[in-house]
Length: 473
Ligand code: 5AD
Ligand code: SF4
Image: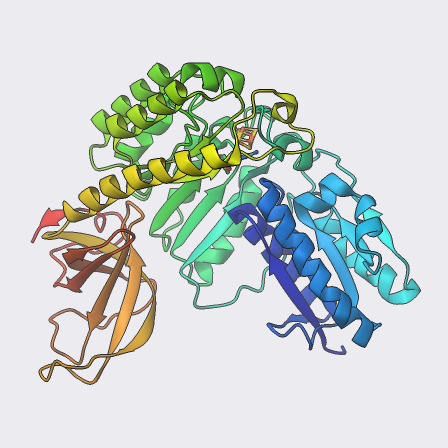
């Protein structure tokens, strides 16, 4: 088979990262090898995101850059996939006339056929068909790259929640769950290839399998936890309205389930939550967080916020700040509200000015920064179990007692905090370190976005099951 090169640009969320991996796997079967060089590419695909206007602009600015390349290399195939492709369909051809292919969020399985057709006929194709059937069920015969510690696995796609600001239900279609057998098969293959941690992806994992009668999400977690070489299990995202006692208990009972939950709240004002069509109140959210912390005190909680949703007053925003002060999140993502085509809020009046949104965003982020620092600082002196993800070589200067060069390892705690540490020479009393291992690290320094520590001898903590304990060193 002749070797051809694929340049794949992924914009957006983890689901797009997973989709891009699926794209690469399917095109590998056609002889396309991935390259990091745009000049070398025979096929360029941009997998796009449209959650906010900024992400969409990023896609179009990349496509603009492609024009020159296409002039130099007319045989190049240029394709757009993902959420912008789904949203815009053949309208993209007007804006980017040299494009060969527009494929939507449910066309990945058909991609090899689409590319082969273009190779043969040099025609232009748009495929944004949405079937809402679980045609993404079948795992490919994966040829997994080795050496990866952590991977994403999509367990469901689409969304039925229709939050007023959100484009996802329109571009990703109706909520559809993959069969547990297919998911388990894929994770087994990953585990065999050396993967130690999987993050299950879905817009609202709490409703996994409900429509199809496939069993609950918590049951799925238990089945996956049986896969022995796997040490850790994560998931994202949970919707507060559906986040229930069964899943809360799993944080206590399922030892492979990491002690972290991302629970987007979006606003602390009931008035705004109602206009957002979120279907819960601030009180309900607080109640669920309290139950979660009662059941699993060490749980880390992160969230998403939107500032400047249409009609958000200063008083509404103050309520959001109050909620942040009350809950003390471990971290959060915050966004300025962005009008999206199709999403109902685009037609809401009382839009908040960009200047106001910027101001509110900064206030919110500053408040959270103080909280994150405080939380990280509280971990100094404790010993945490880290799943090692990788390393980089660092020069150490000015310290004559240290070797000239050291390896800086990086990994995460069960609570999803990044920890960096050195292992120099044989001065440490721990075993040899490698990606995929659990290492106990005594935390010495705390920063805003990471922790710093020293590896210590493991105190009886062996596998993933016992390895997640936090104890005073
Ligand atoms: N404007 C701003 N932020 C948005 N999000 C989703 N849609 C919008 C929008 N139109 C944010 C929400 C969601 C996260 C993935 O993106 O906070 O949880
Ligand atoms: Fe969008 Fe709401 Fe669905 Fe999340 S739950 S993807 S915010 S519609």
